[in-house]
Structure formats: structure tokens, C-alpha cells
Image 1: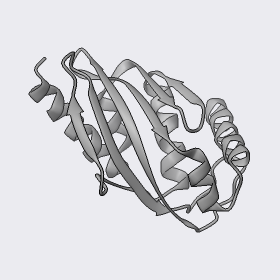
Image 2: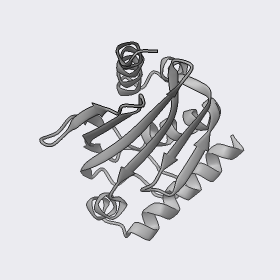
Image 3: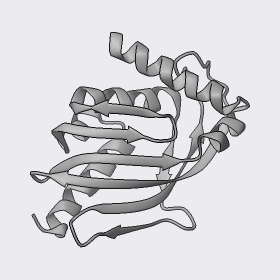
Image 4: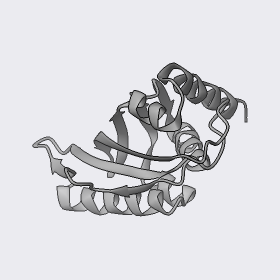
Length: 157
């Protein structure tokens, strides 16, 4: 597929993700997709794993995406997409063992996206977990443990 066709899928993915529309978000993902959240040290496989990844974030934070002051996106010569952006919002719901703090957060991220059969095949998501933890008033180890407990709870559901 051309980058233009893949970009249309990517735009729909971001639109659905931003609107917290799970089924529409999952429809843009390859059935064997892979999500690697390097900040939280989490890996999710397949659409069920992706659903768990999204819902743990959506349930805990009311984040809004923006390109931010330094954000950008670029296609590689082999059809991958690399983007920088910014999330901002508030910690509004539980994240595993971490009760909602109500605190605002803003953090920059970088994501590497690959495609397969015209759908998103993988996302590698990088951000500074220690920065997010400090904004929430917890240490990075505590936030990483909260993500781990959220993932474990989601795996049981």
C-alpha cells in the first residue's frame, strides 16, 4: 500500500483513539498487532491485548493528544511512521493499584508505527515514566507497579 493509503488508516486510528472508540480503534489494527509501551515496560499482543492497553490508559487518564511545540511525524523509506507528540490531561481513574490523584499531567512521547496488510501492525511507545510519576506525586517504581497491576487485572478479565 502507498504511504497515502496507510496515512488514511493512521488518521482514522488517531481519530478513534482520541474519541475513545474502542471498536473503531481496534478495526485499524492488524489481528496480530504488537504494542510495546517502553515507559511502563509492558507488551500487549493481538487486538485483545491492544484493547487492554487502550482501556488501561483511557480509564485512568483523560488525555488529549497534540503535536505539541516540538511534535512532528515522518514516513520512513520502508513504510514505517515515526511521530513525536504530547499528551496532556488529568489522572481521573484508577490505574491498577494507584488510586486517581486528580493531578494534571503533560508528557511528550515518540511512537514508531509499522503496518501489515494495510493495518497498524505495531506501535513502540516511548516516554519518560519518571516525569509522569513525578507529576502524579509517586515514584517511578510505584507507577511501573501500578501499570503492572493494571495489566495483570486486565489479563484476568
